[in-house]
Image (cartoon, rainbow, N blue to C red):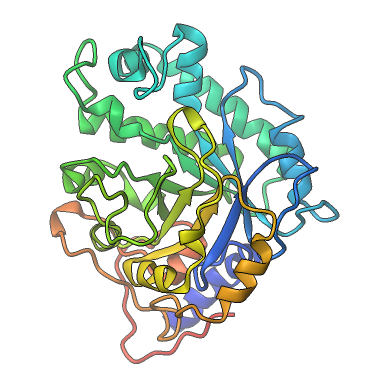
Length: 354
């Protein structure tokens, strides 16, 4: 069979199943606020923080998943987890705080917690993944944005017993992904970006990046009107796209301790969005969007550029850093949620997408 048709047969079902959070257009998503919230019709995904309860919460996460199923208020939207399970578990077990909130903190005892309590963490992932499978099913796509600020466990001199090595961090992340995938075979995954990382190539190079379809921010306070993810940090949107070959989900609307910072309308301006599209960003999640956000999205939608690669067919963009050994994340591969085993290219072939 012609390899193009083989690829089409592989990607076809995934394209249909993953039609809402669409890597071939710019996406808008909102934080889950319960069934009383007025969600913009133009949004394509809804986010929730997973891990805050010892037991999987059917009245919080469960209600969000039900709302996204056929017949629900948010039917057709893609559910997205900020999977903060390590940190939430350490909060409960050791009363650890986020690093920018107080002490004792995850930046002091988080690495040891992972080293000493791997079984505990994996059991929590097992619980959340299995209960999600019961509530959501195993056929439709669901996106897990894995472990916000994961880099904090492998950096800094404050970590008691020393930080995790990059290799340890990468290996454990692989176990977490495998645990979720065991129960949710069609789940897709996104890798966290910490904009203050000084050695991004070494950090991301320690992970099996073919596990991840996308990259994402997870601290809010991102800058739509700057080439840098946050102005106070040198890391740029474009550098992450070029380093990993993966499209980026940005987020905004909250800050220290998860406190709301309100709607950020800089992410509603066509000039900003088009600049970020050029840099590899294809989605923005607003934690607490304004009430008339649907009008803003409708107004700006027709002014946005095409997502790079979607008009010229399936043409992978290759990482410029060969030491990473990260496979390219072309549009079709991102939709599928996993990379092929070998980089592919089809010069001159037009591969239309829906």
